[in-house]
Length: 285
Ligand code: AMP
Ligand code: ZN
Ligand code: FE
Ligand code: FE
Image 1: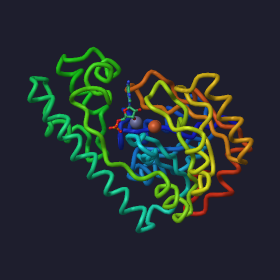
Image 2: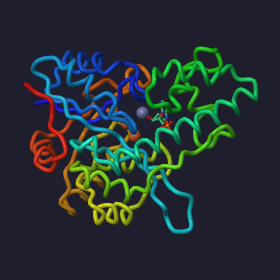
Image 3: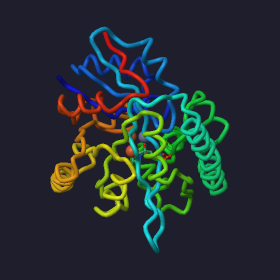
Image 4: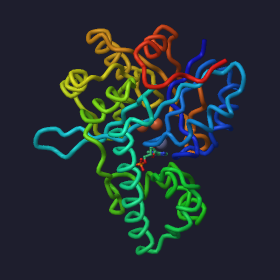
């Protein structure tokens, strides 16, 4: 069994539609794939309808969160959530707030870039996001198309990273609240790429323990952005704390170089997610 539990479609900031993504997953020989777009479940029904025979699809999401260290700026953390009830009112309201927040902040980044003479237009970016969730990768695409960057990675390295003068932070969900909402909605919360120092500041072990106290059930250990040392540290913590261990590609289509299935989850860990998730069910034969 080959299981990839973290992928993004064009419903958020991947480049393949949910149907294309599932075809890519099947062609890559995956047996199970989770669709985990940022802050939205808009791709779930499309994925259910477009699922190729033989492929199991786990409905999921990646929630944008923050950890608040004492005496320090908040740290961005991403929470994977599987098999939750998409209609749980409190959780649905928080996702709607996050999507509005993304729009407001995206518009501010684009306005600052346009003011400085970069070839970006907010109306065009909104149109090209096709009603999906807007993120910095959409702005990166516009910069590439306008000739201001060679690639999405280059746009991030020069203009869109959090040290850039054009960067605007989002007001993301307090991660302990996010974990509580996922659990209330019957879902399984897993800390995404928790020690990926190459992505920016990371939280310490004490924060991970506090997240477990709040109801966290798993750690994403095998992720393309984790070094071997980072994986070993997380694997040991998961063993120590009795947590589920996952592995996944964080596939974004051509917005990132990583192919689907680049990292995978062990079947027994996938079974533990199925056993813990009560808010919705996988789509399968
Ligand atoms: P946002 O959610 O709008 O803050 O944008 C973050 C998204 O940009 C995440 O999906 C990241 O995976 C992606 N991202 C961050 N850094 C890079 C990079 N250097 N190249 C491509 N994508 C990136
Ligand atoms: Zn993304
Ligand atoms: Fe992430
Ligand atoms: Fe992701």
